[in-house]
Image 1 (cartoon, rainbow, N blue to C red):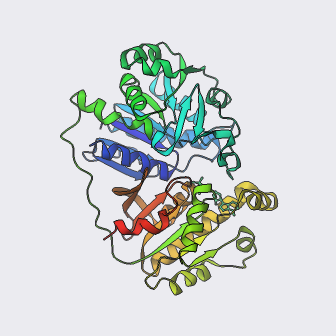
Image 2 (cartoon, helix red, strand yellow):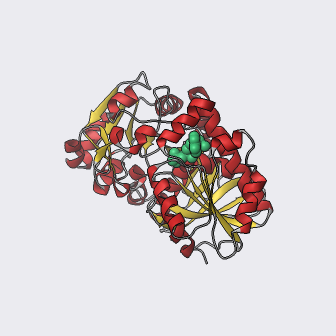
Image 3 (cartoon, helix red, strand yellow):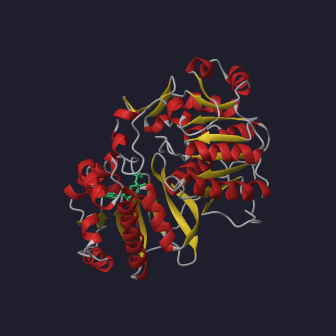
Length: 418
Ligand code: ADP
């Protein structure tokens, strides 16, 4: 194995697995911490998807270290810690603490942090993260239910999460080319926030960091890794991404993301006639809607259509709910509902699910008993269809990070399945 990756959420893991697959690597995505002694057949890269983005930092560290140890024991040459391209975290973590712990595990003193993903309009310039044309702190991420991002200066943001030095490696240094950047990176003691505004920058960074045992960032910075391995003669002949044989059966969309992109996707799908049921946190809390009632709605409306159940709400509504129930409880309550809904629908014969939201996808995967995912065709940048394996049947799953996908994502995704 060349690369052992640890992703802090499921949709991020899928996004990374897709990037590496497209680059010609044989990738296995496993769900949850792998058991010690796990072997990963002949995979070039193993992507472990955790659900560790918003749990207490100590738990995220423990999980990530166990996963890191399993990957190293299975022969990983390089570790990759994957987090969101919008650097989703709080002052308590978990990006800083997990990075610190993985460096300690490896006995290393330096790494880089680069969430840039230019294809999806996330760029880093002078250490500031932009979402499209605006700073992260002016983007809808400022109102994320769990990780509101109110500071776009990543040196500052990460500096609050780690005792290590956090330094900026500016765009000029990246533009100077691989060798100049390598020299700069190797002089860093601590964590380098590296500017990147284009895919070419990301490829330079991947090449310059070839000596790093740990790389951290979004899936973008992994873009150049397959080429780096190929040029070092470490990668076998490119294996094209497999076409996916999706199981036949009925389909549903479950949206637990409150991100702006997801809310636009819901609006468009509804305006084009998608049957939709909104579940509110208060209804769930007061038992005014049960999982089985929501499943009945989906079944009733699934004749030739793909129904949608969503909890997504605008920031004001989310704030009100969080005030009543507490942020964590509100989030967990809805995630549990969506997970149980997927399970109930699976029991009723549904085999195809599109899920919006990273945490929400994690909950769905858990209740469906999925343990591994194979990457299939890409719907929009960073979001492929996947074929699951695990305890039960196999499912076709599109697991969408909240902010990803074009407005017609919920409508067009199905065209890629036979
Ligand atoms: P994203 O990928 O957009 O971050 P996630 O699923 O990761 O989406 O996170 C959204 C979080 O918000 C989840 O914990 C979800 O349960 C919670 N949530 C969803 N709808 C609501 C709502 N109406 N009020 C409060 N929290 C909500």
